[in-house]
Length: 435
Image 1 (spheres, helix red, strand yellow):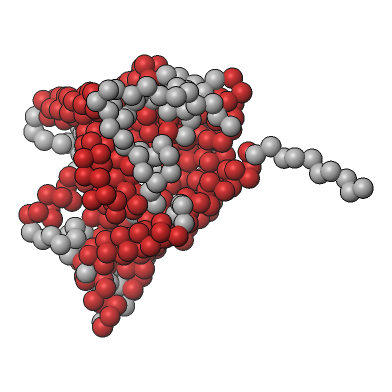
Image 2 (cartoon, rainbow, N blue to C red; image 1 turned 180 degrees about the vertical axis):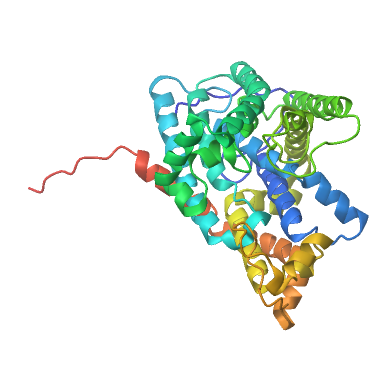
C-alpha cells in the first residue's frame, strides 16, 4: 500500500469530504463541469437557446477538454499520497498502479473509439490519450508541488513547439516519416482505431506532447492542501492570472484575431498559428488560457462544495462517474448520427446541411460521420428524443448516477478499471499445498 502521511489543514479549513473518507467532493463537482461541457458541445446546451446557447458552447469549446485533462493530474495526486508524494517502496507501488491504470484506459479507450467510429470527425475519444497522459506522468509521481510546477512550465513552453517541429518532419519525406509508417503498420491501436503510439503522442486531436503540461499542472495542484481556503484562493487567483496572460498576449501578438480558421492541432505549414489560443490547438497560449480557467473552476468547485453541502450532491455523484458518463455520451452521439436524428438538436447550420445530404455525402473521406445515406430523419419517439437530447441526457445523467451510487460505491467503468488495477498489482499469495 502507498504510504500517506497525515495532512495539516489550515485553521480556517472546512471539511471537504463525503462518501468514503478523504474524498474531495469539490473535485467530483469539477469533473461534472468538465463532462457537462462535453455534453453541451456534442448534444447542445440543455434548457437554453439563442445567445445563451451560443455563449455556453463557445465557453466550453476546448476548455472542458482542458479541465478534464487537468483533473487527470489532480486525480493522480489524490491516489498517490496527496500533499506528500510517496517514496521508496510506496513510490514503486504507486508507479506500478498508475502504469497499469494507464494501460487499462488505453485499451478501454480504443474499444470505445472503435465502437463509436460512426461519429467521424465530430468526436475524438479522449480516453486513450488519457491513458498515455497517465503513462507519461509516471516518472513525475515522486515530485513535490514545486518540482511539478517547474516541469509543467517547461513542458508548456517546449511541448507544443517541439510537437510542431516533429509533425513537420513526419509530414515531409524524412527518416522519421518512415519510422512512423513502420510503427503504424504493426501498432494495434493504429490498426484498430487510428489511435496508435504516434497518433496519441503527436498526430491526434489531443496529442500528449501538447497536453501533458495540463496533467503535470493538475498533479502539482493535487500535491497542495486542497482543504485549505487560503490554498484554494491562491489556486484561483493564479488561474485567473494565467488565463488573462495567455489570452491577452495571444491577442496582442495576433491583433487581427485568431489566425487559424479550424480547431485542432496547428497545421505544419503555418508556424504563425502557434501564437493563437484557439480551442483544441494545444498551443502554449491555449494551455495558459484554458489551463488557467481549469484552476479557477477547481477552486470555485472546492469552495462551493463546502458551502453548499448536500445541495451539490447530485453533481458530485455524477462527477464521480465521469468516465462512465463520457462513454455513455459517446455511444449516445453515435446512435444519434446513425439514426439520422443528430441534426434535430439545433446543431450549426453547416453541419445540419452535411447531415441531410444523404446520397450526396462524399464517400472517399474515412472521417466522415455515418449519416444515413438516404437522407432520412427519424419520426415519433426517436425524433422526440433526438430533438430534446440535451435535456434528455442531462436528466438521465442525474437519475442514473444517483440511483447507481445508492447501491454501488463506484460507477461501472470506474469499478472495472479499479478492479483490474487491484488484480494486476496486488501481491499474489502462494498456494498452500493441501495436507
